[in-house]
Image (cartoon, rainbow, N blue to C red; front, side, top):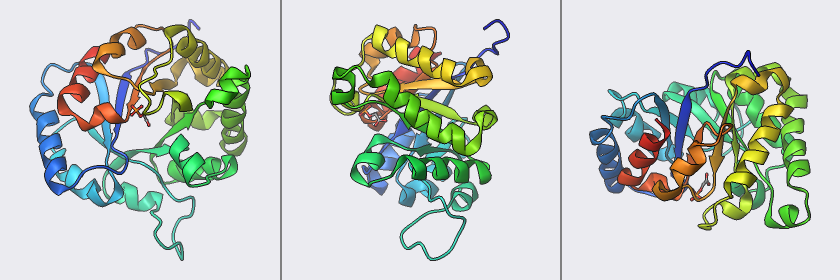
Length: 251
Ligand code: PGA
């Protein structure tokens, strides 16, 4: 790994289906007001689609980037209720989350569709944050790495390894998301090392985030691991103090 570039740290907040104009304004103000002192960390916020403009406006003078929670795989057309990559780009998004387990499980997104969405994000000039992760049953059955290898493999097959030059991967064990159960440092590091190896020559330079119950109290321990480059936050990103504290821990 001696040709590895120094990877920047990245912390991404996924607000999921939470907030309203008033609470978002408070959260965005809280984050930007406390941002001083966060050094060397890239950060992004992914509000619901309908609040992207609000967040774009609030983050206008900030280094914090904007991201979306999903994207449709088509360019345009008769896809009622869907949002294209070009629309996200138009609103100033830099990142888009692809393949979050809530979309795979609750919205029936197949692995093939996740790969198409990843491709569409790249085509629109966005940086996809590809979420992969095993369920509790898969981990208990000793199939964690096999599951993650398959999820990653479908995307690599679709876009090619080189495409990961402009992508981020997030390891999110399904059993750790929103549950308060965080992967142990050994479990997380094993998967991150595996993902890096699966990415071949792109492995050393790809940002690989951990997601699943990251809080100010456990972030430092996770960020100390050699293959963890940052975090994808759900719950903790809805609290300005927690979000900023985790970004500081990554710095
Ligand atoms: P959590 O969610 O931090 O609330 O566990 C993480 C995620 O869904 O990305």
